Length: 297
Image 1 (tube, rainbow, N blue to C red):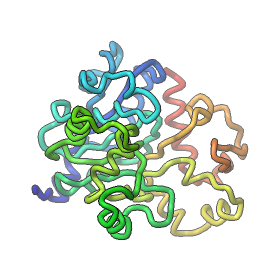
Image 2 (image 1 turned 45 degrees about the horizontal axis):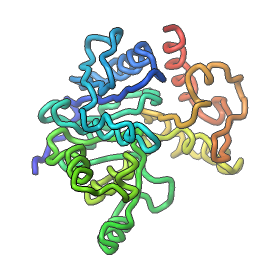
Image 3 (image 1 turned 180 degrees about the vertical axis):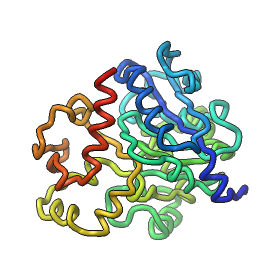
Image 4 (image 1 turned 120 degrees about the vertical axis):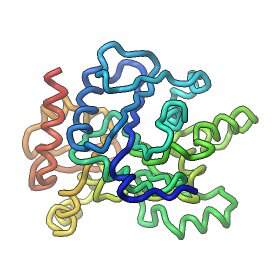
């Protein structure tokens, strides 16, 4: 096992994105890439895994076609198994930490801080489950005692890993699938497979660096909303956040730009929040800045 120095892991890393269909434009991808590169001089390579070569993508981005195996129509449905292409080793630099971002992620700081958490080739980091236990020794013990049947499932909107992992998760999935393993839930959803396969070393991306918008800024309780935006340690943590991922069509850039200050916002699971600085702090303006850049394209 190769142990990386903190200096090396912080200095060089690779950004990985995935794009298929027409939901996101080339210009949108370019804005996201420039946002990352403008805040992180340690990002030395950008890889876009795509269903076809895009003509207007910035030249700094290396476009790589989705591998033939992952082009099955079934892998583009529901659980988006196609996202496991992010681990396809021929796409990646030989020996660097990598950070995968879903395209519905707004970057407001140095993503290299997330890459720096990858300290050896077997490390995997994801956004943690939305429960108190999350990842950790208790969950790992349950996983071991259950023979791998019960495990903590993270969210793959932000994933940090190392390009030198052997075998890669893409290789492991393909080997299982071709051997006839199809039915388990972990074979139908990308983040479930990552969580199941990497459970032994899986760690959480701390909420001081990466968050899901709906978990961080929305709640089913007005009291919790008020507490979170007033607690000093929450306010300090939020100032350090570098990436915010959005889930739900109502949170696309064009929709966010139309929100009035103080407007009540919702998600599909009954959470709500308020689109204002009091509830969100200075991150609101950082999000709007990114959305404005997209809107001008």
